[in-house]
Amino acid sequence: MNGLLEVFLQRRGELLELFIQHMEMTSIAVLLSICIGIPAGILITRRKTAANIVIGIANLMQSIPSIGLLAFLVPVVGIGQRPAIIMVIIYALLPIIKNTYIGITGIESSTMEAAKAVGLSGIQTLFKVQIPIAMPYIMAGIRISAVTAVGTVTIAAFAGAGGLGWFINLGLNANDADLVLLGAIPACALALLIDFILGKIEVALTPEGLKPADKICYHTEKERKKKICWSVTAFVLIFILPCLYTLSGILKPHEKKVVVGSENFTEALILGNIYSLLIQDNTDLDVEEKFNLNGTMITMSAMEGGDIDMFTDYTGVLAPNVLGLGLSTDTDQVYEQVRDGMEDQFDMKVSEPIGFSNTYVFAVSQEVSDKYGITKLSQLLEHAGELRLGCTTAFTQREDLLPKLTDEYGVSFAEVNGLEGNIRYQAIQSGKVDVIDAYETDALLKESGLVVVEDDIGFFPPYQAVSVVRDEVLDEYPELEDVLSELDGAITTEEMMEMNYQVDVEGKTPAETAQEFLEEKGLID
Image (cartoon, rainbow, N blue to C red; front, top):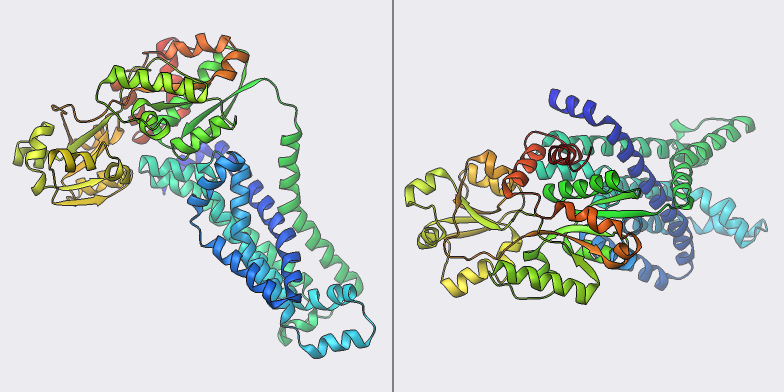
Protein backbone atom coordinates (compact mmCIF):
# COMPACT_ATOMS: atom_id res chain seq x y z
CA MET A 1 0.00 0.00 0.00
CA ASN A 2 2.92 2.35 0.68
CA GLY A 3 4.05 1.79 -2.90
CA LEU A 4 0.62 2.75 -4.24
CA LEU A 5 0.54 5.89 -2.08
CA GLU A 6 4.00 6.88 -3.28
CA VAL A 7 3.03 6.38 -6.94
CA PHE A 8 -0.15 8.41 -6.35
CA LEU A 9 1.79 11.32 -4.84
CA GLN A 10 4.31 11.27 -7.69
CA ARG A 11 1.71 11.16 -10.46
CA ARG A 12 -1.36 12.85 -8.97
CA GLY A 13 -1.26 15.67 -11.53
CA GLU A 14 -1.24 13.22 -14.41
CA LEU A 15 -3.92 11.16 -12.67
CA LEU A 16 -6.25 14.17 -12.46
CA GLU A 17 -5.80 14.92 -16.15
CA LEU A 18 -6.48 11.30 -17.15
CA PHE A 19 -9.48 11.14 -14.79
CA ILE A 20 -11.01 14.19 -16.50
CA GLN A 21 -10.41 12.62 -19.92
CA HIS A 22 -12.05 9.41 -18.72
CA MET A 23 -15.03 11.34 -17.38
CA GLU A 24 -15.38 13.30 -20.63
CA MET A 25 -15.50 10.19 -22.82
CA THR A 26 -17.84 8.36 -20.47
CA SER A 27 -20.25 11.30 -20.24
CA ILE A 28 -20.34 11.93 -24.00
CA ALA A 29 -20.88 8.25 -24.77
CA VAL A 30 -23.63 7.75 -22.18
CA LEU A 31 -25.40 11.00 -23.12
CA LEU A 32 -25.44 10.06 -26.80
CA SER A 33 -26.56 6.52 -25.89
CA ILE A 34 -29.50 7.97 -23.95
CA CYS A 35 -30.40 10.26 -26.86
CA ILE A 36 -30.35 7.30 -29.27
CA GLY A 37 -31.48 4.44 -27.05
CA ILE A 38 -34.63 5.85 -25.41
CA PRO A 39 -36.25 7.06 -28.68
CA ALA A 40 -35.29 3.77 -30.35
CA GLY A 41 -36.79 1.80 -27.45
CA ILE A 42 -40.01 3.81 -27.71
CA LEU A 43 -40.30 3.45 -31.50
CA ILE A 44 -39.90 -0.34 -31.51
CA THR A 45 -42.80 -0.75 -29.07
CA ARG A 46 -45.11 -0.16 -32.03
CA ARG A 47 -43.96 -3.21 -34.03
CA LYS A 48 -42.74 -6.49 -32.57
CA THR A 49 -40.81 -7.35 -35.75
CA ALA A 50 -38.87 -4.10 -35.50
CA ALA A 51 -38.21 -4.79 -31.83
CA ASN A 52 -36.77 -8.23 -32.59
CA ILE A 53 -34.51 -6.81 -35.31
CA VAL A 54 -33.23 -3.81 -33.33
CA ILE A 55 -32.64 -5.72 -30.08
CA GLY A 56 -31.05 -8.56 -32.06
CA ILE A 57 -28.62 -6.16 -33.74
CA ALA A 58 -27.81 -4.54 -30.38
CA ASN A 59 -27.15 -7.99 -28.90
CA LEU A 60 -24.89 -8.88 -31.81
CA MET A 61 -22.88 -5.66 -31.58
CA GLN A 62 -22.34 -6.15 -27.86
CA SER A 63 -20.87 -9.60 -28.46
CA ILE A 64 -17.94 -8.16 -30.49
CA PRO A 65 -14.72 -8.01 -28.41
CA SER A 66 -14.03 -4.39 -27.50
CA ILE A 67 -10.41 -4.30 -28.67
CA GLY A 68 -11.47 -5.83 -32.00
CA LEU A 69 -14.21 -3.26 -32.44
CA LEU A 70 -11.75 -0.48 -31.65
CA ALA A 71 -9.30 -1.81 -34.22
CA PHE A 72 -12.09 -1.84 -36.81
CA LEU A 73 -13.18 1.73 -36.03
CA VAL A 74 -9.73 3.38 -36.12
CA PRO A 75 -9.23 3.08 -39.91
CA VAL A 76 -12.75 4.47 -40.43
CA VAL A 77 -12.91 7.40 -37.99
CA GLY A 78 -9.28 7.84 -36.91
CA ILE A 79 -7.65 7.68 -33.49
CA GLY A 80 -8.39 9.54 -30.27
CA GLN A 81 -11.74 9.96 -28.58
CA ARG A 82 -13.95 9.40 -31.65
CA PRO A 83 -13.50 5.63 -32.03
CA ALA A 84 -13.55 5.20 -28.26
CA ILE A 85 -16.84 7.05 -27.87
CA ILE A 86 -18.45 5.15 -30.76
CA MET A 87 -17.28 1.87 -29.25
CA VAL A 88 -18.79 2.72 -25.87
CA ILE A 89 -22.07 3.85 -27.45
CA ILE A 90 -22.38 0.51 -29.23
CA TYR A 91 -21.96 -1.35 -25.94
CA ALA A 92 -24.19 1.04 -23.96
CA LEU A 93 -27.21 0.98 -26.30
CA LEU A 94 -28.52 -2.52 -25.55
CA PRO A 95 -29.52 -2.01 -21.88
CA ILE A 96 -31.16 1.34 -22.63
CA ILE A 97 -33.11 0.15 -25.68
CA LYS A 98 -34.16 -3.13 -24.09
CA ASN A 99 -35.20 -1.66 -20.74
CA THR A 100 -37.14 1.15 -22.40
CA TYR A 101 -38.95 -1.40 -24.57
CA ILE A 102 -39.73 -3.72 -21.64
CA GLY A 103 -40.84 -0.85 -19.40
CA ILE A 104 -43.32 0.51 -21.93
CA THR A 105 -44.66 -2.79 -23.30
CA GLY A 106 -45.10 -4.06 -19.75
CA ILE A 107 -47.70 -1.42 -18.89
CA GLU A 108 -51.09 -3.01 -18.27
CA SER A 109 -53.64 -2.62 -21.05
CA SER A 110 -56.22 -1.28 -18.58
CA THR A 111 -53.93 1.66 -17.85
CA MET A 112 -53.63 2.47 -21.54
CA GLU A 113 -57.37 2.20 -22.01
CA ALA A 114 -57.92 4.59 -19.09
CA ALA A 115 -55.55 7.11 -20.66
CA LYS A 116 -57.45 6.88 -23.92
CA ALA A 117 -60.78 7.20 -22.12
CA VAL A 118 -59.86 10.52 -20.51
CA GLY A 119 -58.95 11.91 -23.94
CA LEU A 120 -55.16 11.87 -23.85
CA SER A 121 -53.49 12.00 -27.27
CA GLY A 122 -50.71 9.61 -28.23
CA ILE A 123 -47.99 12.11 -27.32
CA GLN A 124 -49.71 13.00 -24.05
CA THR A 125 -50.05 9.32 -23.17
CA LEU A 126 -46.37 8.77 -23.88
CA PHE A 127 -45.12 11.60 -21.67
CA LYS A 128 -47.76 11.54 -18.94
CA VAL A 129 -48.37 7.81 -18.60
CA GLN A 130 -45.92 5.50 -20.39
CA ILE A 131 -42.57 7.18 -19.66
CA PRO A 132 -43.37 7.91 -15.97
CA ILE A 133 -44.50 4.32 -15.41
CA ALA A 134 -41.53 2.90 -17.34
CA MET A 135 -39.06 5.24 -15.62
CA PRO A 136 -37.66 2.63 -13.17
CA TYR A 137 -36.87 0.31 -16.09
CA ILE A 138 -35.40 3.13 -18.20
CA MET A 139 -33.20 4.37 -15.36
CA ALA A 140 -32.04 0.83 -14.61
CA GLY A 141 -30.90 0.53 -18.23
CA ILE A 142 -29.10 3.87 -18.06
CA ARG A 143 -27.35 2.87 -14.84
CA ILE A 144 -26.15 -0.42 -16.33
CA SER A 145 -24.91 1.39 -19.43
CA ALA A 146 -23.13 4.09 -17.46
CA VAL A 147 -21.27 1.65 -15.21
CA THR A 148 -20.35 -0.50 -18.21
CA ALA A 149 -19.16 2.59 -20.08
CA VAL A 150 -16.68 3.54 -17.34
CA GLY A 151 -15.00 0.15 -17.67
CA THR A 152 -15.12 0.07 -21.46
CA VAL A 153 -13.54 3.52 -21.76
CA THR A 154 -10.32 2.09 -20.29
CA ILE A 155 -9.82 0.40 -23.70
CA ALA A 156 -9.79 3.89 -25.25
CA ALA A 157 -6.18 4.32 -24.18
CA PHE A 158 -5.16 1.87 -26.91
CA ALA A 159 -6.44 4.30 -29.55
CA GLY A 160 -4.54 7.28 -28.19
CA ALA A 161 -7.56 8.71 -26.38
CA GLY A 162 -6.03 8.81 -22.91
CA GLY A 163 -8.14 8.08 -19.86
CA LEU A 164 -7.34 5.87 -16.89
CA GLY A 165 -6.51 2.94 -19.16
CA TRP A 166 -3.18 4.71 -19.77
CA PHE A 167 -1.98 3.81 -16.25
CA ILE A 168 -3.30 0.27 -16.58
CA ASN A 169 -1.31 -0.23 -19.79
CA LEU A 170 1.85 1.25 -18.26
CA GLY A 171 1.45 -1.05 -15.28
CA LEU A 172 1.02 -4.12 -17.46
CA ASN A 173 4.10 -3.19 -19.49
CA ALA A 174 6.20 -2.79 -16.37
CA ASN A 175 4.58 -5.62 -14.38
CA ASP A 176 3.77 -2.92 -11.81
CA ALA A 177 0.61 -3.64 -9.81
CA ASP A 178 0.67 -0.16 -8.26
CA LEU A 179 0.36 1.54 -11.66
CA VAL A 180 -2.45 -0.83 -12.63
CA LEU A 181 -4.28 0.01 -9.40
CA LEU A 182 -3.66 3.73 -9.95
CA GLY A 183 -5.80 3.44 -13.07
CA ALA A 184 -8.25 0.79 -11.87
CA ILE A 185 -9.22 2.23 -8.47
CA PRO A 186 -10.30 5.68 -9.77
CA ALA A 187 -12.21 3.95 -12.58
CA CYS A 188 -14.08 1.84 -10.01
CA ALA A 189 -14.73 4.91 -7.87
CA LEU A 190 -16.05 6.81 -10.90
CA ALA A 191 -18.39 3.95 -11.78
CA LEU A 192 -19.73 3.82 -8.22
CA LEU A 193 -20.15 7.62 -8.10
CA ILE A 194 -22.06 7.74 -11.38
CA ASP A 195 -24.27 4.83 -10.32
CA PHE A 196 -24.98 6.53 -6.96
CA ILE A 197 -25.96 9.82 -8.61
CA LEU A 198 -28.12 8.08 -11.21
CA GLY A 199 -29.75 6.10 -8.41
CA LYS A 200 -30.74 9.34 -6.71
CA ILE A 201 -32.05 10.71 -10.01
CA GLU A 202 -34.07 7.52 -10.47
CA VAL A 203 -35.69 7.94 -7.05
CA ALA A 204 -36.51 11.58 -7.80
CA LEU A 205 -38.08 10.83 -11.20
CA THR A 206 -40.04 7.69 -10.23
CA PRO A 207 -43.69 8.47 -9.38
CA GLU A 208 -44.45 7.80 -5.72
CA GLY A 209 -47.29 5.43 -6.65
CA LEU A 210 -44.83 3.07 -8.35
CA LYS A 211 -42.60 2.72 -5.31
CA PRO A 212 -42.90 -0.01 -2.66
CA ALA A 213 -45.30 0.92 0.12
CA ASP A 214 -42.51 1.50 2.65
CA LYS A 215 -40.70 3.85 0.24
CA ILE A 216 -43.63 6.13 -0.55
CA CYS A 217 -43.28 9.67 0.78
CA TYR A 218 -45.72 12.54 0.53
CA HIS A 219 -44.16 15.63 -1.06
CA THR A 220 -45.59 19.08 -1.52
CA GLU A 221 -45.50 20.62 -4.97
CA LYS A 222 -42.53 22.74 -3.88
CA GLU A 223 -40.63 19.68 -2.64
CA ARG A 224 -41.39 17.77 -5.83
CA LYS A 225 -40.07 20.62 -7.98
CA LYS A 226 -36.98 20.82 -5.77
CA LYS A 227 -36.26 17.12 -6.34
CA ILE A 228 -36.65 17.50 -10.08
CA CYS A 229 -34.38 20.56 -10.05
CA TRP A 230 -31.74 18.61 -8.10
CA SER A 231 -32.00 15.76 -10.61
CA VAL A 232 -31.52 18.09 -13.56
CA THR A 233 -28.53 19.75 -11.85
CA ALA A 234 -26.88 16.39 -11.13
CA PHE A 235 -27.47 15.25 -14.71
CA VAL A 236 -25.91 18.44 -16.05
CA LEU A 237 -22.87 18.06 -13.81
CA ILE A 238 -22.05 14.47 -14.75
CA PHE A 239 -23.09 14.51 -18.40
CA ILE A 240 -23.54 17.98 -19.91
CA LEU A 241 -20.55 19.87 -18.43
CA PRO A 242 -17.93 17.30 -19.52
CA CYS A 243 -19.41 17.43 -23.03
CA LEU A 244 -19.18 21.22 -23.09
CA TYR A 245 -15.58 21.05 -21.86
CA THR A 246 -14.69 18.71 -24.73
CA LEU A 247 -16.54 20.92 -27.23
CA SER A 248 -14.58 23.98 -26.08
CA GLY A 249 -11.33 22.13 -26.83
CA ILE A 250 -12.55 21.18 -30.30
CA LEU A 251 -13.54 24.77 -31.12
CA LYS A 252 -10.22 26.21 -29.89
CA PRO A 253 -8.13 27.55 -32.82
CA HIS A 254 -5.29 25.21 -33.78
CA GLU A 255 -1.74 26.50 -34.02
CA LYS A 256 0.84 24.95 -36.31
CA LYS A 257 1.82 21.68 -34.74
CA VAL A 258 3.31 18.25 -35.22
CA VAL A 259 1.50 15.19 -33.87
CA VAL A 260 3.89 12.55 -32.56
CA GLY A 261 2.44 9.06 -32.20
CA SER A 262 3.70 5.93 -30.49
CA GLU A 263 2.62 2.37 -29.92
CA ASN A 264 1.66 0.96 -26.54
CA PHE A 265 4.85 -0.60 -25.20
CA THR A 266 7.55 0.94 -23.07
CA GLU A 267 10.23 1.39 -25.73
CA ALA A 268 7.83 3.07 -28.16
CA LEU A 269 6.61 5.43 -25.42
CA ILE A 270 10.18 6.42 -24.56
CA LEU A 271 11.04 7.05 -28.20
CA GLY A 272 7.82 9.02 -28.69
CA ASN A 273 8.79 11.27 -25.78
CA ILE A 274 12.34 11.63 -27.09
CA TYR A 275 11.14 12.91 -30.46
CA SER A 276 8.46 15.09 -28.87
CA LEU A 277 10.94 16.81 -26.53
CA LEU A 278 13.52 17.18 -29.29
CA ILE A 279 11.05 18.96 -31.57
CA GLN A 280 9.74 21.22 -28.79
CA ASP A 281 13.23 22.29 -27.73
CA ASN A 282 14.65 22.90 -31.20
CA THR A 283 11.71 24.41 -33.14
CA ASP A 284 8.84 26.82 -32.54
CA LEU A 285 6.33 24.10 -33.41
CA ASP A 286 3.70 22.91 -30.95
CA VAL A 287 3.74 19.16 -30.38
CA GLU A 288 0.70 17.05 -29.69
CA GLU A 289 1.28 13.54 -28.36
CA LYS A 290 -0.90 10.64 -29.43
CA PHE A 291 0.69 7.79 -27.54
CA ASN A 292 -0.36 4.24 -26.62
CA LEU A 293 -1.69 3.16 -30.03
CA ASN A 294 -2.37 -0.55 -30.17
CA GLY A 295 0.08 -1.88 -32.73
CA THR A 296 1.62 -0.99 -36.07
CA MET A 297 -1.54 -1.35 -38.15
CA ILE A 298 -3.55 1.09 -36.01
CA THR A 299 -0.58 3.46 -36.01
CA MET A 300 -0.27 3.27 -39.79
CA SER A 301 -4.01 3.91 -40.15
CA ALA A 302 -3.54 7.03 -38.05
CA MET A 303 -0.62 8.11 -40.27
CA GLU A 304 -2.56 7.57 -43.48
CA GLY A 305 -5.55 9.46 -42.08
CA GLY A 306 -3.39 12.41 -41.00
CA ASP A 307 -4.20 11.91 -37.30
CA ILE A 308 -0.50 11.61 -36.46
CA ASP A 309 2.53 12.91 -38.34
CA MET A 310 5.29 10.56 -37.21
CA PHE A 311 6.08 7.47 -35.15
CA THR A 312 8.91 4.99 -34.60
CA ASP A 313 8.95 1.35 -35.62
CA TYR A 314 11.29 -1.38 -36.79
CA THR A 315 12.40 -2.52 -40.23
CA GLY A 316 11.50 -6.09 -39.32
CA VAL A 317 7.93 -5.01 -38.56
CA LEU A 318 7.34 -2.58 -41.40
CA ALA A 319 8.63 -4.90 -44.12
CA PRO A 320 6.19 -7.82 -43.63
CA ASN A 321 3.26 -6.14 -41.87
CA VAL A 322 2.97 -2.86 -43.77
CA LEU A 323 4.74 -3.48 -47.08
CA GLY A 324 3.96 -7.19 -47.41
CA LEU A 325 7.58 -8.09 -48.10
CA GLY A 326 9.32 -11.34 -47.34
CA LEU A 327 12.11 -10.82 -44.86
CA SER A 328 15.74 -11.62 -45.50
CA THR A 329 18.40 -11.60 -42.80
CA ASP A 330 20.44 -8.99 -44.68
CA THR A 331 20.22 -5.88 -42.51
CA ASP A 332 21.08 -3.35 -45.24
CA GLN A 333 18.76 -4.95 -47.78
CA VAL A 334 15.77 -4.93 -45.43
CA TYR A 335 16.40 -1.29 -44.51
CA GLU A 336 16.58 -0.22 -48.16
CA GLN A 337 13.39 -2.12 -48.99
CA VAL A 338 11.57 -0.44 -46.11
CA ARG A 339 12.94 3.04 -46.92
CA ASP A 340 12.00 2.83 -50.61
CA GLY A 341 8.70 1.01 -50.04
CA MET A 342 7.37 3.48 -47.48
CA GLU A 343 8.22 6.38 -49.78
CA ASP A 344 6.73 4.80 -52.90
CA GLN A 345 3.56 3.37 -51.37
CA PHE A 346 2.73 5.83 -48.59
CA ASP A 347 4.67 9.08 -49.22
CA MET A 348 6.44 8.65 -45.90
CA LYS A 349 10.12 9.22 -45.18
CA VAL A 350 12.00 6.62 -43.19
CA SER A 351 14.94 7.99 -41.21
CA GLU A 352 18.40 6.57 -41.06
CA PRO A 353 18.54 3.83 -38.39
CA ILE A 354 18.28 5.32 -34.91
CA GLY A 355 21.20 3.14 -33.88
CA PHE A 356 19.89 0.18 -31.93
CA SER A 357 18.36 -3.09 -32.98
CA ASN A 358 15.46 -4.71 -31.17
CA THR A 359 15.47 -8.05 -32.91
CA TYR A 360 14.04 -11.27 -31.50
CA VAL A 361 16.20 -13.43 -29.28
CA PHE A 362 15.65 -16.64 -27.36
CA ALA A 363 16.36 -16.63 -23.63
CA VAL A 364 16.70 -19.56 -21.24
CA SER A 365 17.13 -19.81 -17.49
CA GLN A 366 20.64 -20.29 -16.09
CA GLU A 367 19.62 -23.78 -14.97
CA VAL A 368 18.55 -24.82 -18.47
CA SER A 369 21.68 -23.28 -19.97
CA ASP A 370 23.89 -25.23 -17.57
CA LYS A 371 21.95 -28.50 -17.94
CA TYR A 372 21.98 -28.62 -21.73
CA GLY A 373 25.01 -26.45 -22.46
CA ILE A 374 22.91 -23.89 -24.33
CA THR A 375 24.45 -20.53 -25.14
CA LYS A 376 23.88 -20.49 -28.92
CA LEU A 377 20.81 -20.96 -31.08
CA SER A 378 22.25 -24.01 -32.83
CA GLN A 379 22.60 -25.71 -29.43
CA LEU A 380 19.07 -24.75 -28.42
CA LEU A 381 17.62 -26.25 -31.60
CA GLU A 382 19.39 -29.55 -30.87
CA HIS A 383 17.55 -29.84 -27.55
CA ALA A 384 14.23 -28.24 -28.61
CA GLY A 385 12.32 -31.52 -28.27
CA GLU A 386 13.11 -31.54 -24.55
CA LEU A 387 12.19 -27.89 -23.91
CA ARG A 388 8.93 -26.05 -23.25
CA LEU A 389 8.61 -22.79 -25.21
CA GLY A 390 6.66 -19.79 -23.95
CA CYS A 391 6.21 -17.18 -26.67
CA THR A 392 3.97 -14.44 -27.96
CA THR A 393 1.14 -15.20 -30.35
CA ALA A 394 2.94 -13.24 -33.06
CA PHE A 395 5.95 -15.53 -32.71
CA THR A 396 3.80 -18.60 -33.35
CA GLN A 397 2.08 -17.07 -36.40
CA ARG A 398 4.69 -15.14 -38.34
CA GLU A 399 6.09 -17.27 -41.16
CA ASP A 400 9.64 -16.07 -40.53
CA LEU A 401 9.63 -17.16 -36.88
CA LEU A 402 8.28 -20.38 -35.33
CA PRO A 403 6.74 -21.73 -38.59
CA LYS A 404 10.15 -21.26 -40.26
CA LEU A 405 11.85 -23.17 -37.45
CA THR A 406 9.36 -25.98 -37.94
CA ASP A 407 9.34 -26.11 -41.74
CA GLU A 408 12.95 -25.37 -42.61
CA TYR A 409 14.82 -26.64 -39.56
CA GLY A 410 12.49 -29.47 -38.51
CA VAL A 411 12.33 -28.10 -34.96
CA SER A 412 9.56 -29.25 -32.65
CA PHE A 413 9.47 -28.06 -29.04
CA ALA A 414 8.10 -30.33 -26.32
CA GLU A 415 5.39 -27.70 -25.66
CA VAL A 416 4.46 -24.37 -27.18
CA ASN A 417 2.60 -22.03 -24.82
CA GLY A 418 1.13 -18.77 -26.10
CA LEU A 419 2.01 -16.07 -23.56
CA GLU A 420 1.96 -12.29 -23.85
CA GLY A 421 4.10 -9.52 -22.43
CA ASN A 422 5.66 -9.96 -19.04
CA ILE A 423 3.79 -13.20 -18.42
CA ARG A 424 6.56 -14.94 -20.38
CA TYR A 425 9.13 -13.80 -17.83
CA GLN A 426 6.95 -14.85 -14.92
CA ALA A 427 6.47 -18.25 -16.53
CA ILE A 428 10.19 -18.94 -17.06
CA GLN A 429 11.13 -17.69 -13.59
CA SER A 430 8.54 -20.00 -12.02
CA GLY A 431 9.74 -22.97 -14.07
CA LYS A 432 6.56 -23.33 -16.12
CA VAL A 433 8.52 -22.97 -19.39
CA ASP A 434 12.18 -23.47 -20.27
CA VAL A 435 12.73 -20.99 -23.09
CA ILE A 436 11.00 -17.76 -24.15
CA ASP A 437 11.11 -15.39 -27.06
CA ALA A 438 12.20 -11.87 -26.14
CA TYR A 439 13.35 -8.63 -27.68
CA GLU A 440 16.99 -7.61 -27.55
CA THR A 441 16.30 -4.44 -25.51
CA ASP A 442 13.77 -5.90 -23.04
CA ALA A 443 14.34 -4.46 -19.58
CA LEU A 444 13.34 -7.71 -17.94
CA LEU A 445 16.18 -9.53 -19.69
CA LYS A 446 18.50 -7.39 -17.62
CA GLU A 447 16.55 -7.79 -14.39
CA SER A 448 15.76 -11.52 -14.61
CA GLY A 449 19.29 -12.79 -15.16
CA LEU A 450 18.26 -15.01 -18.07
CA VAL A 451 20.81 -16.28 -20.55
CA VAL A 452 20.35 -14.63 -23.96
CA VAL A 453 20.94 -17.21 -26.67
CA GLU A 454 23.35 -16.04 -29.38
CA ASP A 455 21.91 -16.29 -32.91
CA ASP A 456 24.91 -18.07 -34.44
CA ILE A 457 22.94 -19.28 -37.49
CA GLY A 458 21.62 -15.86 -38.56
CA PHE A 459 18.01 -16.96 -38.12
CA PHE A 460 16.22 -13.86 -36.87
CA PRO A 461 15.44 -10.97 -39.26
CA PRO A 462 16.86 -7.49 -38.52
CA TYR A 463 14.82 -5.08 -36.44
CA GLN A 464 16.54 -1.71 -36.83
CA ALA A 465 14.66 1.12 -35.13
CA VAL A 466 13.67 3.98 -37.46
CA SER A 467 11.35 6.95 -37.40
CA VAL A 468 8.66 7.42 -40.04
CA VAL A 469 7.38 10.89 -40.99
CA ARG A 470 4.74 11.94 -43.51
CA ASP A 471 6.26 13.79 -46.49
CA GLU A 472 3.49 16.38 -46.26
CA VAL A 473 4.67 17.40 -42.79
CA LEU A 474 8.30 17.69 -43.88
CA ASP A 475 7.23 19.85 -46.83
CA GLU A 476 5.23 22.13 -44.53
CA TYR A 477 7.92 22.33 -41.83
CA PRO A 478 11.28 21.81 -43.60
CA GLU A 479 13.20 22.67 -40.43
CA LEU A 480 11.90 19.42 -38.95
CA GLU A 481 14.14 17.18 -41.06
CA ASP A 482 17.41 18.51 -39.63
CA VAL A 483 16.07 18.29 -36.08
CA LEU A 484 14.93 14.69 -36.45
CA SER A 485 18.24 13.68 -38.04
CA GLU A 486 19.92 14.47 -34.70
CA LEU A 487 18.79 11.03 -33.56
CA ASP A 488 20.22 9.12 -36.52
CA GLY A 489 22.57 6.54 -34.98
CA ALA A 490 22.25 8.23 -31.58
CA ILE A 491 20.93 5.35 -29.41
CA THR A 492 22.82 2.11 -28.86
CA THR A 493 21.17 -1.18 -27.99
CA GLU A 494 22.64 -0.99 -24.48
CA GLU A 495 21.34 2.56 -23.99
CA MET A 496 17.85 1.58 -25.12
CA MET A 497 17.79 -1.41 -22.77
CA GLU A 498 18.90 0.85 -19.92
CA MET A 499 16.11 3.35 -20.65
CA ASN A 500 13.56 0.52 -20.74
CA TYR A 501 14.97 -0.69 -17.42
CA GLN A 502 14.57 2.73 -15.85
CA VAL A 503 10.87 2.77 -16.76
CA ASP A 504 9.86 -0.87 -16.30
CA VAL A 505 11.96 -1.67 -13.23
CA GLU A 506 12.95 1.58 -11.53
CA GLY A 507 9.55 3.20 -12.02
CA LYS A 508 10.52 6.36 -13.91
CA THR A 509 8.08 7.79 -16.42
CA PRO A 510 8.89 7.54 -20.15
CA ALA A 511 8.98 11.36 -20.29
CA GLU A 512 11.51 11.64 -17.44
CA THR A 513 13.71 8.97 -18.97
CA ALA A 514 13.57 10.61 -22.40
CA GLN A 515 14.48 14.03 -21.01
CA GLU A 516 17.44 12.68 -19.05
CA PHE A 517 18.76 10.89 -22.14
CA LEU A 518 18.49 13.98 -24.35
CA GLU A 519 20.17 16.17 -21.75
CA GLU A 520 23.05 13.69 -21.32
CA LYS A 521 23.53 13.64 -25.11
CA GLY A 522 23.42 17.44 -25.25
CA LEU A 523 20.48 17.37 -27.66
CA ILE A 524 18.30 19.63 -25.50
CA ASP A 525 19.12 22.28 -22.90
